[in-house]
Each structure stands twice: as C-alpha cells, then as structure tokens.
Length: 171
Image (cartoon, rainbow, N blue to C red; front, side, top):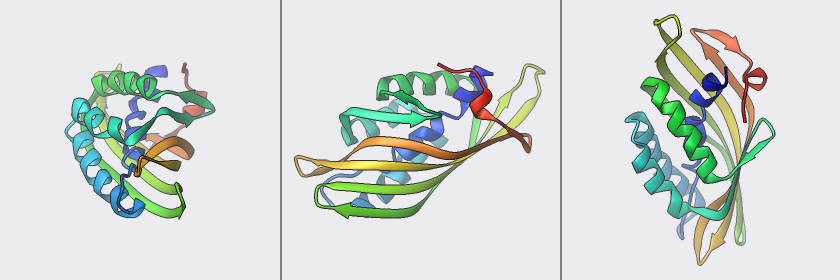
C-alpha cells in the first residue's frame, strides 16, 4: 500500500504552486499555480523542480500525516509516484485564504488531483486525491519563498471508493 500513498504525493507539488516572489503573494501564487499545474498535468517533473526550487527556502519542510520531509525527500517520492501513474487527468488548486503580514505570509488552499494507473489486477483504476494545505512564506531578499507546507483533511478514493491513506505504509 506504500506505493499507493506515494501516488498522490505529486499533489504536494501542487501546493508548491503557492510560491511567491517580490510582487504580491496572491498574484504570485496564481501565476505559479498555473505553471506548476501544467507541469504536473504533462508529468514533467524536471520542469516542476525547475519552477519550485527558486521559490522555496533552503530549510523548506513538507508535512503530511505527521511526517516531515525536505524538498529532496518529497521530490524523490514524487518520482516514484509518477512512475506508477499512467495519466494525470486533472490537477486543480483553489485558494481559500491568503494573509500577508510584513515579511511573512500564510495561505490555505484546496487541492484536487485525478490520475489513472494500472493496478496489480492489470486494470486501469482512477485515483482521486483531495486535501487542504496550510502554507507558510517568508520574504528572502525581497522575494516570497515557501518555508513550510502542511497538509490536512486529505481524502483519497480509488474507483470512487474511499481509501484511508493514513493506514497505508510509509516512510
């Protein structure tokens, strides 16, 4: 089941669209969302990494199910996940809230990713992940960078049936 959990770590990537630079946090989040979503839809992890790295802090932390990872750890799991995915059918992010206070910022976003993959039964299965990210930003040399992304309210279905991702194997 560990591999199934990893299938949806790419959704984490969508949260990274909430990255920002010198302009307003909201406009940068929306710009990065468009770019990163396109990279994920085309399964272009090299492009994803190219877009994300300049927009996160060196000590960036990704937190999901109580597990904290660095960008490299998250990215390596994403590569494993994408190897199992046949097609990314849809990726979307909806900004719920954004707050800037001086050189810090917080955002909340809802995410959804729909993929297909072949199961052990050799049949194609539709996986849907939905979750909420709470993201923290800091300004570094005048540019917004994401320093922390923490997930909550994650739900996953396979062929329309709920799956409990917290019960799956993991790191």
